[in-house]
Image (cartoon, rainbow, N blue to C red; front, side, top):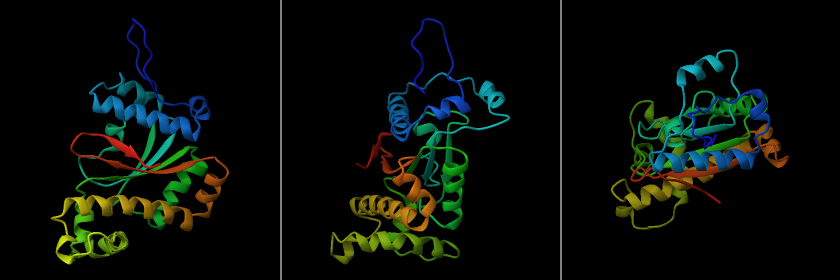
Amino acid sequence: MVPPKTNKQKYMKAHTRETQATMTPQKSLDYLKEGNKRFQNNLKANRNLLEQVNDTSEGQFPFATILSCIDSRVSAELVFDQGLGDIFSIRIAGNFVNEDILGSMEFASKLAGTKLIVVLGHTSCGAIKGACDHARLGNLTALINKIEPAVDAVTAPAEAHLRNSKNLEFVDAVAAQNVVMTIKNIRQQSPILAEMEQENEIMIVGAMYDLSNGEVTFFE
């Protein structure tokens, strides 16, 4: 929420059932864009987090669900300048979906009332690099296998020696393609979320976070 401009110091409040009800998919997206601008400019909204702990102790009313990578530099709450109770944050290396993650999204949207789903990739992603190099290591192998279709979907460059983690332009192109394919998988594998989107109850969007400057670029 945008902090009020008054002479007297005021804190951002946690979302309530009433404020959540006023949120639309577009308004939710605008809130995240505004929050990322604050983050980029080091202008965090004023919050009393202990007060928000109290305010959310008996219920939560987030407005958005964000699927992002486990990368320690890409915390959705921080890069979008959100407080306790504002967003559901789902994190997994490579920000892809599986049955459990889709179930979490369905809970967040259908039962808990969030209006927006964001699939957030990022530059220089380690999981994407692993997929580009076709890495194999224990349980990581199964995870990498889920991302590799995005590698195959990026056709340029065609030269094999340029299609690896050393080519950061290729890595970022695969990361963006992985976001697009993840959104497609959400729509195909979750009839509940697909129907909610068709009825304009939610919006499903993709975005990329730039590790070099903190900017989130949303896909049109």
